[in-house]
Image 1 (cartoon, rainbow, N blue to C red):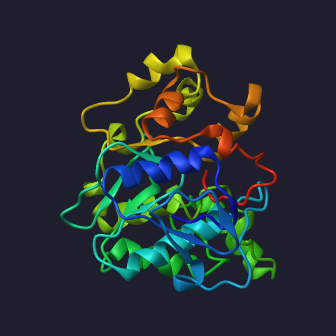
Image 2 (image 1 turned 60 degrees about the vertical axis):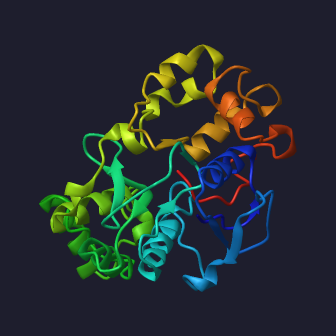
Image 3 (image 1 turned 180 degrees about the vertical axis):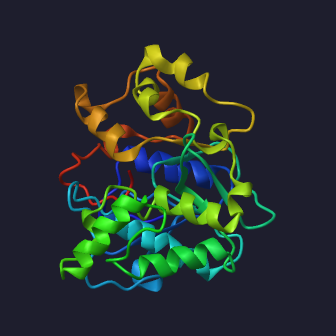
Length: 277
């Protein structure tokens, strides 16, 4: 997990604690001061994985997701059976893998890297590392017209930086493309395993009246729930006291893991330094 700097809100606390409570060891990497970290978490400076003088931010949103993408790829080279999880991934059951591969479809078109395990010798991982080493590279999965436009810009001396490409280019888009290119997509779980609640139902997890709809998405195979970090925090911040409904799914999970939402309030997106989507 990576939290660049600043206090964790109760959303991140919940997710981190969920991994601890199923028996996983958790390491939280950071680059600045962090607080509200649950007891039992190893807190390690990000330089142990990737030294950066400057964080890559998305041009339109200002998100640090691009840097987070690169960080996780480097992290996965450092050990066998290592699994990356974003700080908005709630763990339902222990993550287990025989091959080192651990990822799943989030939609009909994309494999998400919010939870990502790849063996150090993965051809897809090698491709992701090589790709992310070129901040002006042209994604091989783009259509011919898009690639020609990018080549023309580069030949004219005005190459397009990755931060000005559509969101997700080094994340889900790249993960999906490289896994498909190498054939490792055969290891991908169905949507109900890691991303059971679709984006358009995310607020159902906050509302008491939406709990049944959210829980209906879960199956016996579900091992994680994506809580849609920045988006769900923005919604929570807009509510009275910044809290989920009493009796809603998130409220129930907070109580299950003993998380006090008053002690770690949600922070507006414009001031937080998180790297989750």
